[in-house]
Figure 1 (cartoon, helix red, strand yellow):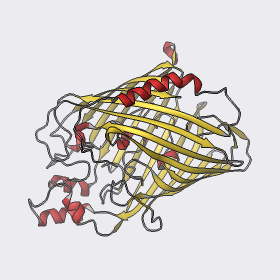
Figure 2: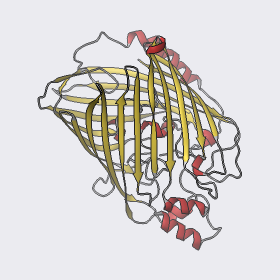
Figure 3: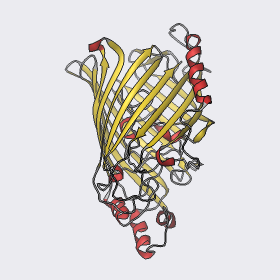
Figure 4: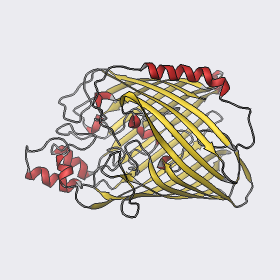
Length: 455
């Protein structure tokens, strides 16, 4: 998913964003009531500012969709209000308006499979933009098995539910709000920043360019098992903002099975996710044939656009594992393989992904609210996408003009320092080997600083 950014890179943080940051800090004492067992309404807020830079790096050549080889800076800022209301028993309605702002590396979102900032999909330029991010209904049907307390949170009313239950979510939300949960690698505002760490990089989940859509998700909880199924809308054109609401014809389906377990006295979970998209997409084999028939007569993704003329099926399957190792350490792993025959529908340009790492709380050094994260990622391409890029093809996010293929390998490490109950400052480092799968470019070192508040 991507916006076009017809702006010059310049201002790193506007006065508007700074005012919201400081205003939110001043209002924090007023935004928290005493802990309650059950809420009928909720109003919470988050603010996140993420600044990143990469020094100049080696590049034998560059193409139309290469990340700039010179020194660059980028930033994102988001502010969200999480408003919730319980209109009837076991029913919840949520509205999330968001203000976003930011400019990516290279003045456009290009040049990587695993992008370095999870907020960048919603940053529409150097001026703040207000939009409705989510509007959805969640209904729960309880079915015994004991009672579990639900803690108050963002888009979550305090209360209680049965361990065995059926939950239906309907409306405007993100597929990732329901599918692919992981305690240790999920939230780019508080944990790892790279796209390949907060979900599978190869998960081309249906969504608009900001990462949200319309549809439904059903969840059945039974003892230690969870079964999830959902259908979501995708974009009218690949990676576009306009939503295709013809859910009987074009859609993204996902099915996930989860099992919770206890291993050596420590909780963990294993999840298997399968997904299937149906949309008007270009196949890479057709685009390669078009390139060969029109040598030197195209610019940008012309080949993909020229053969984007029929409905295609795109699918993938993945496994997601989390495991508590100690009172302060958790392990995670995700791996997914997609078919890779067609262009990217709504996420990023990855056909096979692997990520694994640890999240460590600061208990051992007297900073229990601090967090250290360490991870390794590997992204790969299908043979079809690889041949298209090697022939000089340009796709939506990547295209160096040619390709000396190697897997894209990424290390990410961060330290999140608690500034108090509601504020965190994070230092993050990412090293990207073979950016956009090209051994003739890189490696790229990316340094980041992130401020996050929940009010």
